Length: 334
Image 1 (tube, rainbow, N blue to C red):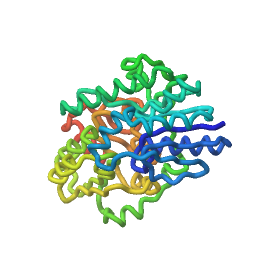
Image 2 (tube, rainbow, N blue to C red):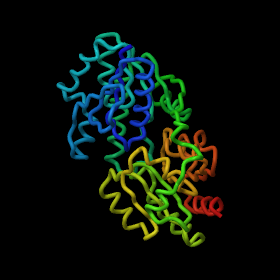
Image 3 (spheres, rainbow, N blue to C red):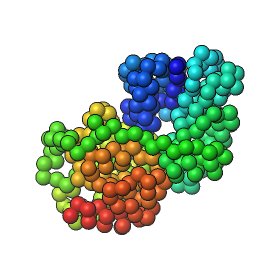
């Protein structure tokens, strides 16, 4: 079969894109002709093709472009090239537009893979909230003619039904047990950051406001008082410049911002930590939390979104309760 997989970005630092990469590999391995279509990409394909359509490089313009993608008639016309595909799988807006039009004009099977849209009141900025409401509105238009929908958690299944009226099946993101397991050695990360005599806390993800890294840093101040040799590794690409500046001011000398790290190195970071910590206020799945547990490590997180389903080893505390969060980390480490 000819299968087109659509995702806005196909980059190593995105959890959704890592899911897309695994999906593309699996379909290609079964003998299918697979093409991943994205607006931008840096993942090197294996036995499948990647098409990058392009978009603005400026972060602000990029966000506006993705919201109003349907106004770029030249890019929108790419749906015509999907005419000879058997299945089109879309993982996130605005790529749904191409799948929606391919289904409308050529009756191609259209599958929506739901990773969730954060439209909760947790976004305090009015313009951000408006942006996400418009995002959801346009997304719902593109889902009117789907053949099937799959959500990556029970939490998202309920949200999709509520926000879009669509019934979906739950398929949890797969964890590659060959890469993420208890046998991984932490030596190179311990050596790289000089962590030999330290208790290591780890966070991996985009440095975005809803990920709650600012709350994590405030909690770490309390944790340090009880565990003086604690270090916090914050792994991920800063995606909001002003927010990252705020984080740098909050962080003490025992907080290490690593920036983006290659996907192949992630298992070693998981192996190097004592506890995985996330103060995220919204998660549709939380791939790092699932991967780190496969490596035998425990998680401390807020009881939000998909966490009650995903976090099986560790402690969940009430959302934004920094005191309870700190106490949970201290108890697990000690």
